[in-house]
Length: 232
Ligand code: SF4
Image (cartoon, rainbow, N blue to C red; front, side, top):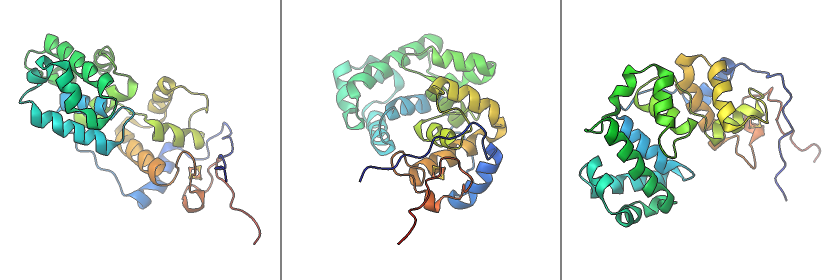
């Protein structure tokens, strides 16, 4: 039987972002941010994770780190060799040249491949610098700023976007770009990390794209909730 789609969400959200987090934290645990302090590794890992499962991109990242002793070595390696190294991560023919182009751009700015200078910039300048890199969109830039540097940027991946739309926090028609701007305005900056993590977990474990498990969802007032079948 075809999956029943959630009803279209009306415009008034039943929950604030804070209320959503209060209801999801007891289910998934309270996320605690621990910035990695390694923005370039975060950037490369995030590029590898684009349109790929986390396990595969993690494996490709480890292979990259094992094969090459430095960022410079990856930059200067033959493209075909880098493609082969990350091929288990998926889309290697797109991602290998993207990663090398990013590393070349980083080397132009910082000869020792240190992206720590981003912390000294105003947030929007740091975001703009990252966005100017090849293949770096709003989500990837926000991942680097939030996960590596602990700066207030909110990554909106496919799970966060879907759950936010189902809860009518943002309009159904919002683009990925608009979703970032709208949610950053809605969520208190000091809570970007838990909001991101809780909505990702909820999207993966409960509010799945095709068959959301509304019957065990704690967001009882969700306007997209699928009613259980009535009768015996
Ligand atoms: S799983 Fe929860 S958030 Fe998702 S559509 Fe169902 S009730 Fe809404």
